[in-house]
Amino acid sequence: MATYRAHRLTGPRTFEAVTLDVPSPQDLEAGHAVVRLEAGVVCGSDIPRWDGSEWSGFPAAPGFPLHEAVGRVVHSRSDRLPVGSRIVGIPQQDRGVQEVFVASDEAAVTVRDDVPPAVAAIVQPLSTVVYAVERLGDVSGRSVLIIGFGALGHLTAWLLRLRGAEVTTVDPVPEPEAATWGSERHFAVAAAGLSAADLDRGPDIVVEIVGHGQDAVADAIRLVRPRGTVLVMGVPRPGAALPLEEAFRRNVALVSSVGPPWREYLTKARALVELHTDFLARLITHTVPFTAAPEAYELYARRVPGRLKVAVVA
Image 1: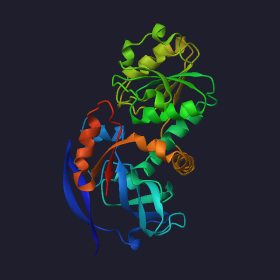
Image 2: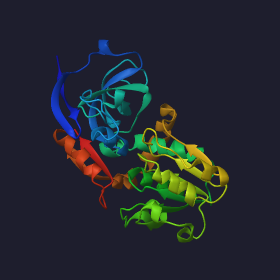
Image 3: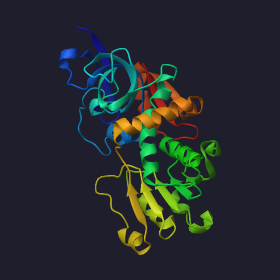
Image 4: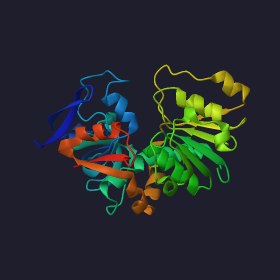
């Protein structure tokens, strides 16, 4: 039986290499495919599970945690994912740190062969951004402040600017290329250090993409104009609270966005990635070989200027 390599998280920040059997077609559920990995990309939401700060299920299943992946179908029980097709898919149970993963056709789309592997994987995070931005309605001419200018913040600024918004960003990490991604002003400070005076006026919309706490959402509610909108995209820490009274008194509309209808929004994001491949390639700033996959998490966890997405390439 054919085998493949995987990385298994055995404790906080600790992977071990394991060898597993490739699933056979008989092992697959209807609508699923076995995919040989070309590239996977680490997401900010993977880090609290990797370092144990918000997760304690060690040892994890092999391949966990990674959900942004692209590869070639080797076995399939889906007409939508035929053998030989190249797909961007969310690995089942977020088990993407392995040379072979299983994906459902409800959370995967085919992608052109000429899109580089790590760039193709951007389809997944971009799908969440497209969904979030659509939840805001028409943003043309509206002022938007983005709190948190990591990789997802870059994609959000870019898409909002494409749709005509006036974008300002804030993050403690400096970003000399902020304008390239659509930000008209970038404040290299924590959002807590900003005031309405710094922004000339309260923005119509504040997008929070920090997550794993509550301070950034509180800052968003404080900084948005009265009767404005706060869009929460950052994954909150369990038990996080909100300054609900302040939001209530200021008539702030709170919108949250996570987990879009995957097939629809992966398709929309694929169109953008295939149209803007060369530009979006700059989001992938670091790559490591599959054998060094644990290093990708260490790199991503250390936020420094110029470091955005870290890809694991098979």
